[in-house]
Length: 209
Image 1 (cartoon, rainbow, N blue to C red):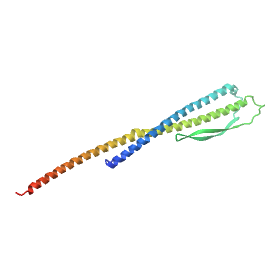
Image 2 (image 1 turned 60 degrees about the vertical axis):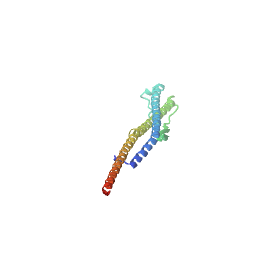
Image 3 (image 1 turned 90 degrees about the vertical axis):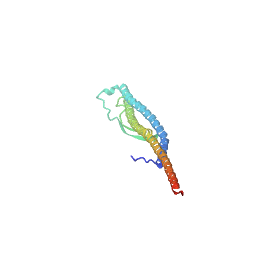
C-alpha cells in the first residue's frame, strides 16, 4: 500500500476519490438489489422445474403402469437429438434460455403396438424436455448467485473499505495541515518577535551617547 502523502494535493485527490466512490455506490447497490431479486426468481423457477420433473415421472408411472413390465422394451422409441439455447440479458448478466428441443421418434406400427404407445411417446418427450429445462434453470441460478456474490463484494468494498479509508485519510491530512499551519504561524510570530528584539537592540547600541 502506497504511503499517504500529507499534502494539499493529496487532500484534493482523496476528496475527489471520496466523491467518486459516493457517486458509484448507489448504482452498485441498486444493481445488487436487482440481481438479488432476479436470483430469488431464478431459485423459484428452479423449484418449479424440479417439481415439474418429479410430477411428470409420477404421472408417467400412474398413467402407464404397464411400463413396469420388464418384458416391454421402449428404449429406442424416443431420442433427444439436441436442444437450442438462446441468451437473455438480465441486469447486464447473460443467462441461458431454452428455445427448442429436438426429438427423433422411431417409427412404429399403429396396429402392432399397444394403444397407449402414442401417450408414451408424448410423455417421454415431456419428461426429457422438463429435464433440459431443469438443467437450464440450474445454470441460471448458478450464474446469478455468482453475480450477486461479486456485486455484493464490490458494494462491501466501497462501503466498508474505500469510503471509510478516504474519509480517514482526509481527516488525517486536514489535521496534519492544520497543525502545520498553526506551527508555521507560531514560528512566524516567534521570528517576528526575535527580529523586533534584534532591531531594538541594534537601535540602542547605535544611539549616540
